[in-house]
Image (tube, rainbow, N blue to C red; front, side, top):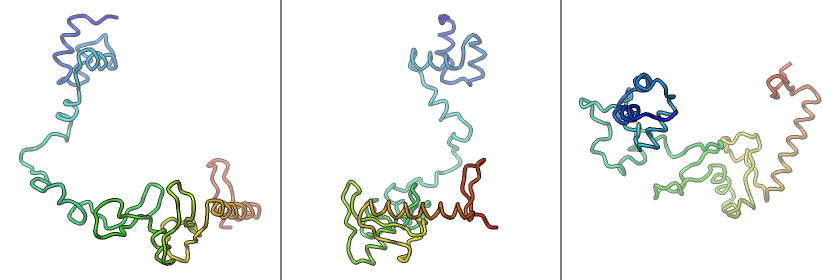
Length: 195
């Protein structure tokens, strides 16, 4: 169904300022998607100002001063930043990264803790190429945050690392066969049998 001139006029006047419910009442023969498409594509109107300017909690209150007013951005680095948590962080993959260089504030001064600990113990850098081949570090107990030197093993290549993990898998299956580890078919998860 084609848009009428009256509908287009209502849309142009109210699209950026009216609530969704009000627009739906003013244009009863139109779906919300068609209203958004017509406003955005045909008339190049945007509701982003509406969302940010009038949404609850997003309006700026004149009686409140922002906590960072008058503080330059560079002054909020490191310990001066209220969200600062120290010289380490944990990645999405579960590894702890630590700051190894105090003279710079860049992300390149952070390294995986397990690699830094092992390199410090060995007295040399781990030999690894840019594509990830070469030496690496294996966590013996599987806990990526346990970076004690007794829990770290230097492997010479990825093949050796896979063999270590394969040994662990075969031992796990032996524990399943002995009933020490059980499998729940409903949750599809292995669990330790405490009995």
